[in-house]
Amino acid sequence: MAFINGAWAQDQFKVLLYTRQDAWHYESIPVAIEAFRKMSKQHQFDFSWTQNADDLTQDLSSYGAVVFLNANADSLTKEQLAGLKTYMNAGGGFVGIHACSNGDIRKPWFDKLIGGVFKDHPKLQTGIVHNVAPLFPSNLHLPEQFLWSDEWYNFTHLQSQAFRVVLTVDESSYNTTLGYDETPLMGMGKVHPVAWYQEYDGGRSFYTSLGHKPEVFLSQMFLEHIYGGLYWVVNGKEANNEY
Image (cartoon, rainbow, N blue to C red):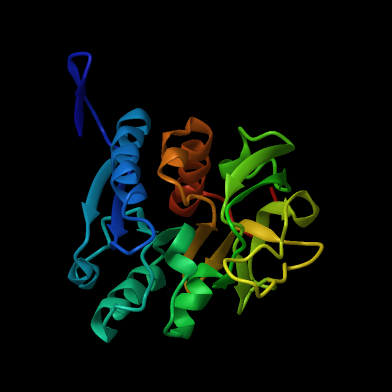
């Protein structure tokens, strides 16, 4: 609850942001945390941040959404993962951002919660992104197509039959083969999903693979993309009602 213009304003919902430091996102995570703080003030929701995975074993029922930012399930214990399962089974909301799909240890329930598993990506490049669900909350403010510079994740274990894609990237707009050594990479073909949403195991899940560089968390366009995903997992309509 916040005191605004001489009156108490009730928060819409609560969000728990979970992060874990790694070798690739140590610069972006602090910027993202501050961006979430500002977003929570703008949109009037209660915001908590943790790096302690044991917090996932606590009662999460008061949270409208749990957000994994560049944190995967590799280090989660059975008890910590069970806490997240219990939360989702009870109708919880989950938002995954960027590298939470990148894990070395296969944990099938979590892989399906995300909707896919990171395989590899070419060097960071500019590509053309297509807004294929303009009425979905994360996309309402986005143009039909736009330029974006990021790591274009290629995925395996993709649960494409279960989720609805909201953003795709045009592989002809960047070099899909440009890896970090002499071994050329392969893209995903005509349809290369970038962001999607689904109902999963009693709850709702939204994932966006965008968000590598710290600068993107200074972009209002990107933050509204994330907030739209948050909004949907908290109180959006059923996934089988197409946007």
